[in-house]
Image (cartoon, rainbow, N blue to C red; front, side, top):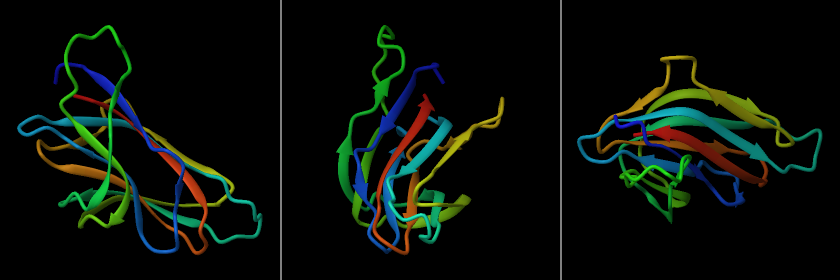
Length: 148
């Protein structure tokens, strides 16, 4: 890993009421990616609404989504980011392993920061996604901070 840090931020997305991948990062072929931070936030209006299931998962397919350009944390770094990202699944990717699940109130947010040395590793050519399942449609946005 060359130490090129980047983040991907989704636009505001309507969750719907079925499983929806909000954000996915794909590592370049033959190059691992470290995920050091994840977050999902919601713009719910009901204080009595049911919690939203938030999954961080390995995904074996890309699904159908909109492309998203990763942004370098240090714009002075000359290397090009090789990872790709996409958001807002219209056809869900195949989930192969659920890494963590949190239940989050629709007026709240979920944020995870890796402990030192405990980053999530995405193998070369593999994918990781942030997906939600909500009982009622709510607006959400998601973010990942990574390093190649």
